Image (cartoon, rainbow, N blue to C red; front, side):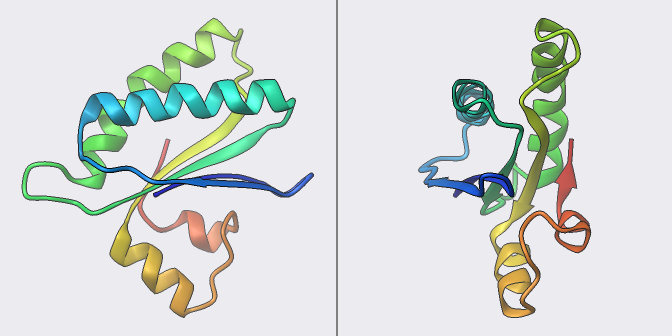
Length: 114
């Protein structure tokens, strides 16, 4: 699941991810940056994934960091995505059960933020 989150004007755009393909995560990162740019907002991208034995949230976060840095350089250090967070579906479900609000510091402690 992908969540593009912004408190002002409170944009929440959700999507789904069908496969654990590293290229798909990079594509989602680029699409989210483009969407935020077109909307004229600074947003956070949250990727909720079901880890597998060979694809963990940490691996995807590390893989995506290079592309996030590249986007930042292209935009003179001012990307529209203020952060990108990768977390497992179990961490996300736990946050929901504990009423942890998306975008809070407590929520950002889950998973990996790049």
